[in-house]
Image (cartoon, rainbow, N blue to C red):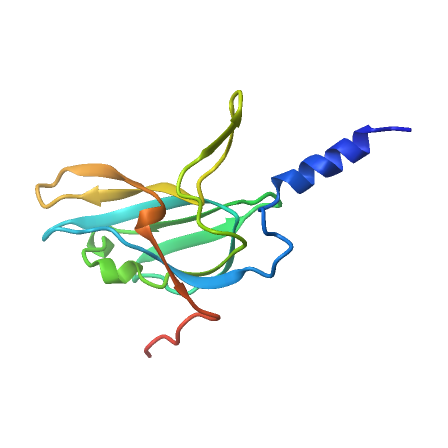
Length: 159
């Protein structure tokens, strides 16, 4: 009897989110970062674990937004301004970006699983910020920068 296919199946099950058998809960995901006067956001990227992207609900004017996942529990949402005048200076522009489904509680940090292994945090990434001084910097993003509001669909957009 060959044990290899059984081992592969068990490993695949272990890689699924802990509560994958449950239907999951849906939320509107927003990015929350404090901005000072003159600050501008030009891009962001957030890697996810155990999150399904159901829809991109909002695309700020002059931006490109991509979101999705793989056959494993990992995924990503990323966005970038297409021109300097489309940099975001108001945090409200990043509210209600995507409709997502989570299959378990938000995992705040990576969990080590042994030598070199880990289960990633639910949300981890970075955001490109230009300060009023003209200096750019990357700001680290984590679970505290992603706001989840219970929702079943994207909100209606104003005409």
